[in-house]
Image (cartoon, rainbow, N blue to C red; front, side, top):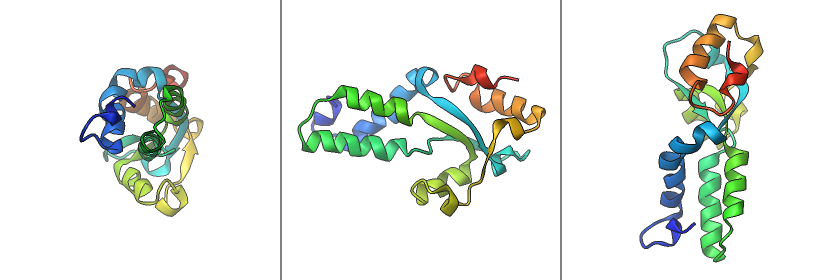
Length: 145
């Protein structure tokens, strides 16, 4: 919130400080995998995969920063609470990630179908754990094969 009060710092830029810079330092403490993988990501393909913030963390934090600026609030607890609540991710393909953004998080509209982790073949779970979860989410050990 301090950053958002600096000259030439928009709410989006202030939010980006967390989502693009600070998240790297804290993601292993906050970010949690839901145990859901898109059907496309579950398929054995070489396409790029993403940890998708299905709760729309970027737009939510930007709106929160804007609200705090407009109302001249200083409530870091609200920011922290939002981070903890919105740092949940599914595994999806890059194309699905962009489709979800265009659909404002509506997975049905984006054509994304999620399946539970336990329904994936063990080999695929092991591959996804190594590639997508290990070192990237706080609860990775819960999904380790």
